[in-house]
Length: 295
Image 1 (cartoon, rainbow, N blue to C red):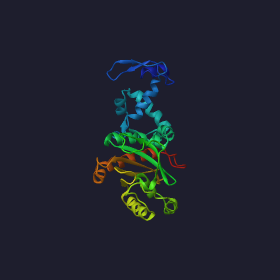
Image 2 (tube, rainbow, N blue to C red):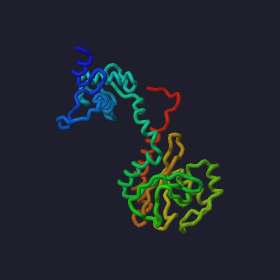
Image 3 (tube, rainbow, N blue to C red):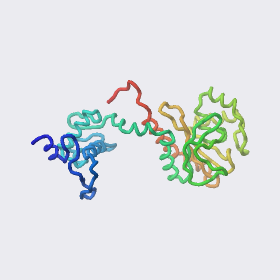
Image 4 (cartoon, rainbow, N blue to C red):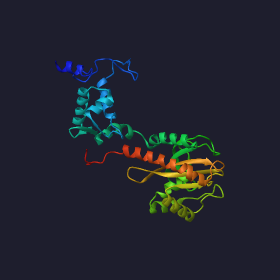
């Protein structure tokens, strides 16, 4: 039997890896048509990779064949090809993925901006707690909104991407300022005007320094009606791959809906979880370190 015939006998692949069947099995066992462009060997190769997961970090050949629906011969061919390419390692009996598979998603992640990475996390967060969520960065004396999910309007002004507020009067501003070096914070304090927006607004450099010391220790900032009467917000930092504070994310609510204590108990845990998710995506999107060893 020649190479093409053998490959076809093992699952419909020709010797060059192209699909020869034009159809595949649907989840209920029936065939569903595929376009003439469909490369079944690529689909099968990806199925082999996704057979591995948190619950199945190591698999035998038989287990991969069972998980993917491939014959043992076809599963072996795909696994050994992935070993040759560096995506899979084997001890002779069991197979497992290597860190090189992260490169498959790197191009996508590296093409996303910080707001693009954050937006899905903010959407899930707002859906979970039914409060508006935002991300901002520090620019001069102000915070600038770079991502936002609004579930209700609780401020007199409309907030959108690009909206700016003075950092000293906002929860995200306090988090971002707390992440500055002592020198950068002194430079900020020397130029900030500390305008008062309500009778609760932090209105001096000394008061701000005291507030930021607590923010650094607690890892979050809760601002109670400093920017506008009735507005409460809680924020946490988002750290970049280098460990520095890259942005802040917050949840905002009306004072009539949640007390400060309720915000800490009900909003802070999911807010921190969202920040961790964004940080994980930022780490995955960071350029690989030069000279780092490969698995």
